[in-house]
Amino acid sequence: MQDVLIRHDWTIEEIKAIYNTPLLELVFRAATVHRQYQDTAEVQVCTLLSIKTGGCPEDCAYCPQAARYDTGVNVHGLLQKEQVLHYAKKAKDAGSTRFCMGAAWREVRDNRDFDRVLDMVKGVNEMGMEVCCTLGMLTEEQAKKLADAGLYAYNHNLDTSKEHYSEIITTRTYDDRLETLDNVRKAGVSVCCGGIIGLGESHEDRIQMLHTLSNLPTHPESVPINALTRVKGTPLEHMPKVEFWDMVRMIATTRILIPGAMVRLSAGRAEMSVSEQALCFMAGANSIFTGEKLLTTKNPSFEEDHMMFELLGLKAREAFKDEKETATAC
Image (cartoon, rainbow, N blue to C red; front, side, top):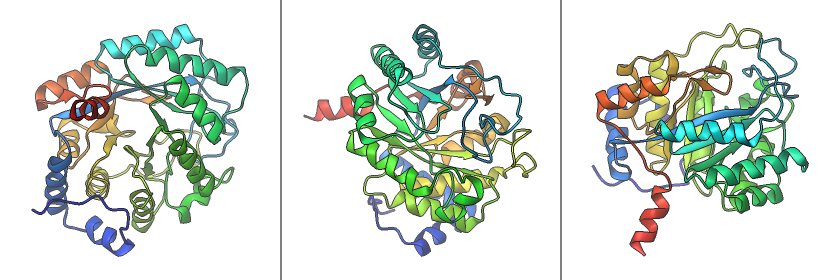
């Protein structure tokens, strides 16, 4: 197969044709692309910690942390730095190389809480881990402060297509999302940006979202593909479970469109068997979250993932690998 070039000019029709490829052929094509750009035995192991939980003023229809929904989430303020570093060390000792901190904020505000987050970023960075944050919308100046503190990546998902977005979220716009991504880029921080399937969207919406992601001037370095976690009390609690095959199709299509990215098998993994996860890895996924929780929802434990890695012959990708390879090449 001819080497796949990294493109930023995919058309809707091209993406639709890839997405609708018969599934086994699609997986084979994605696996071939994966081998051209990645070590397929490596998986980036990340851990996500909620450093400020609940009470969010947004109305994201899927989110248990929105203040307006009664979901039983225990609200707590910003954790202390010592607590965060303790959890980061535990994650590192268990094999994680990227540590992600999430705060249930609509946007970053220039206050003492943000100063405390900057201090956390510095502390985790000093441990030799890649540091990622997801804190809501932020300005270019705030992104620069995070970069100066040692932030490696910033997560800000598009969630769905621009056309479907207002059906899921009304408290901010799609363009607000894109503006934050632009601010992150300007600060020199790598971008983690993907979406969620199972929000009541159409296949066309999924294709539109992938069109937006794959045509960004610089592709996201990390693309999480999430299956909706249905949480009682949210407007989407009665949505049907996402079909496993839909996750495989999304992962494979993403791998073909954005071949250089870490494609993360994210929310929904707790409901997958090891064999199902193995097919996702074959289709191009090469990043996971490990640890008992994804912010507030269930996730496979460190021990379960260690057993899976052993069975499948996978190894954890080392931290800062791209930078180390660049330095060696120079």
